[in-house]
Amino acid sequence: MSPDSAPRNASASAQGSAATPAAPRLTPGRIARRAALAAPAIGFAMLVYSYLSLPDVRTLKTANPSTTAFMELRAREARAKGLTPRRVQRWVAYSRISPEVKRAVLVAEDAAFWQHEGIDFEQLQESLEADWTRGQLLRGGSTITQQLAKNLYLSPSKNPIRKLRELVIARRLEAELKKSRILELYLNTIEWGDGIYGIEAAARTYFHKSAAELDTSEAALLAGAIINPRVHNPARPTARLLRRQQLILRRMGAVTPPQESAQLER
Image 1: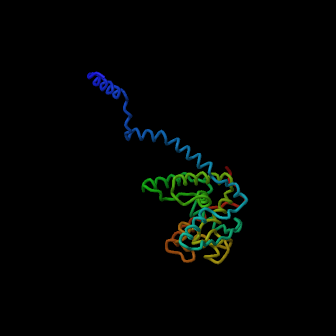
Image 2: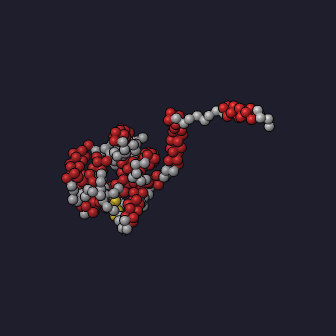
Image 3: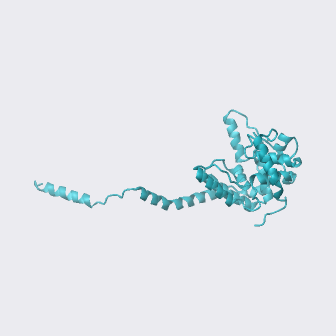
């Protein structure tokens, strides 16, 4: 190779390097645009997955669940502490539950039960706005149907995917079951104290009578305790529980529970 060929080769190499375009820098703006483009596809994929993996609620028309996801969670918590899980539950038919209990629970947990089809969008919006203001997911806003969906099949976590599944299951429950059946399932499966599940077990534990025999005052106490059943004991009510009882009593006359044979028109 001649002495002056090296500079020419070096020059050619430099020109070749200069001809190769540099990779575009990932600026915050570009990252945001790419994320915005990918978000709908990711959201759709998550929606499809959530829908396909949902439980079949049609069996609940004629069969009572032997357990629930929430009961199993409480059992795992007990075993983790080295304790034997406690479960007191006695299923009772809807017709054998005091109408006062039904009214009280609707007032306390879902006054719009007759008006919605599983989701109270107005209450949900208020809940989301409150959570946004606080910067975290705190407020409830769930209907009885949503609570039933969560208790039967899901966890109590605040995960957005879990919440999405809850909403879809709630809609399925409303599409497949009568309002009276939804309320029957709810009243027989919710927690009413440590290891106490359902209205019959609660009535016998706290008042030593059946769910059919509960009076207005007792029903309001039980309904008021749902907000935190491990803290509020209807047999030894705190001042806060008594205030909730009085509030519920004042509103009970304006609520009509679903009849056993009634089917909500859609």
